[in-house]
Image (cartoon, rainbow, N blue to C red; front, side):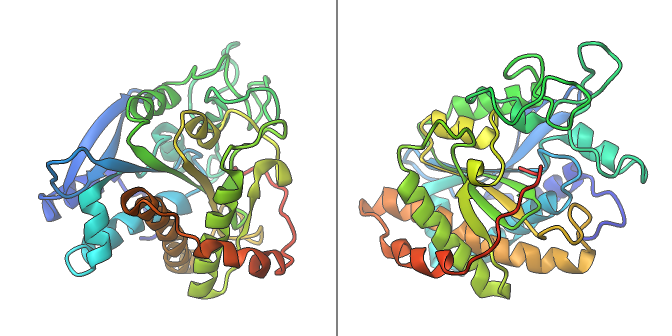
Length: 330
């Protein structure tokens, strides 16, 4: 994967189906404002039982190019390993993986247009007055609206005219909402900041399983650290940047127990323009963190017992003393 040329995701997704036809299918589940098809890869082994599921989306913010790269890396890793890794095979037998490599396709393609559009964040729908463009899709979900949003269409965090006004948010809301009883884990991938964020973004609300989310998140951060010694801060968004209307918060409000936002590298040196030589190591470490969360959710569901080892990482990571980052990336 490189940044020098645009990667048509539909071609890559079709190639994954060709390479792994027994376990991969493409599911179209919506359209963008500019009428591009929103698709995901459904990955899993056949089972006679009703399966649980894992959700992962990348590219909800156009300029965060490392995120779609990670979704591709994640898909390739599980597909290349399930025949030899019994744990991955078991999880693919018990769960389907729904992976959307680019959710905000219009914005993502616009960010490739030229240097003046490289840092575009939002989608491409016109504002109410017609003289500004784009809604921040991660402020457009129906989740505790009221803080960390803007009603000014020119703002990077413009939340839209009303909750779920945007077709991209509508697509996720319908697809995930209609399967919410089966989805164990909702992971949305962003950059930057090296953060693992748990619900909720609004300081007046706390997730009912907040302590467990923190324990699992801290253990995931340790898994990330173990790969390339990069420190990820774990916490709720109000500790970093209060916000509302995020897909993560909406998913938790639907009853999906394990919902996390990943903010990948770096901590601001290169920000959204992460150098290409950091793509692979970023994906490698994030894969370790994501796999820990997914494995925890799977094992708790299918073994009937909680994985308790995560709690021991509390003091380790809290003692690291990493400075909190305050940026508008989540």
